[in-house]
Image (tube, rainbow, N blue to C red):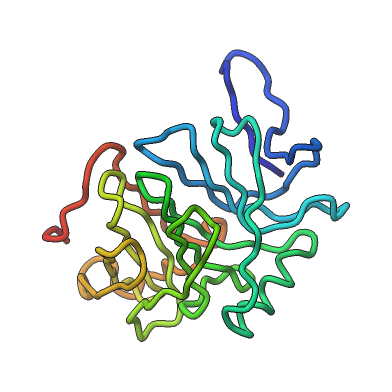
Length: 212
């Protein structure tokens, strides 16, 4: 399984999640895009069985016609390095990524199998050129991040216990905003194919931190 970018919905489309040499990526866990720059997408694929592509993050700046792989940021922690080595082998989940509305900030919840541990959440302010660890400020084990569709500095984190966190500094740090309610004990900290729940943000609208 891969990804597809249709320019005409009445015509078939070949697998378009490929590198410059035409080598395709497989099993793209999620994709996010910029509301203000809708030509820019980021995707979390696995590397293919031939080893000609490696997993991690890939970015397109032409609406998924072509992709460039983001260099993995080794050296941030031993635990991250272990997972990056695994991601570079064929058919290993890369995790979950969120892109800010201006396409500059990426927040990546690196996967451990089908889970998204809070210790493996990292942020880049320059579209993947440099990275730093995220302070989730969460006591829960797992952490999955989404970007606000309008405010470039606003991100939300959802945990394995159904708690909701928000970041107003572009994903660098998060604070708890919602603990009890209908999502209590709902596990949001899995890649989507393993989740029994799904989160959607309304395109073109900014989320109010005052709402639950």
